[in-house]
Length: 225
Image (cartoon, rainbow, N blue to C red; front, side, top):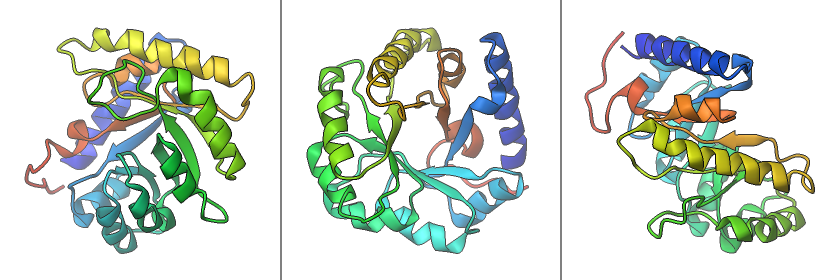
């Protein structure tokens, strides 16, 4: 049941934060609701969840109006520049600002939602994200466009052992620390998913993106509470 799974994830979050000597309140759980219908999202909302993640503009635009207005929607997937105007009205934080064309599209809004730079911290060719060495230039472009960049996001390479993600999460934290010397608003770290969010929290994540541990695998039947 969604409510029970949320409780289980939150307990694991608290334990990971305490192991790292962190305040658990400093970590936000983004429940990745992509592929889940509005009724399922509502059950999570009724269990106290307020932050949800979507990765398709059309799905977000269709789902958001059906659900309570105080939900904070996080756009976590690759966003095509031409679809930015679809996602913009519903998005609280864009996690995947990764190229100049998207900066231009997001910045056309007079008051664009806050954004995180998506960093390809591991350098995998198949992954989206700006290279660490190009992050400063993209930050400059975003700032000039009036986009408030509040942190960095990454996806660690798939690995059978969550510990394998630690080096990448640590690298993202160090990059954030370097960039924040010139961009003090760069405080957030969006990293960690179902398989490795505890390691991410231990390495400083402030936002974790968890879907499967809450809603089940993509395409799984919704469970009633």
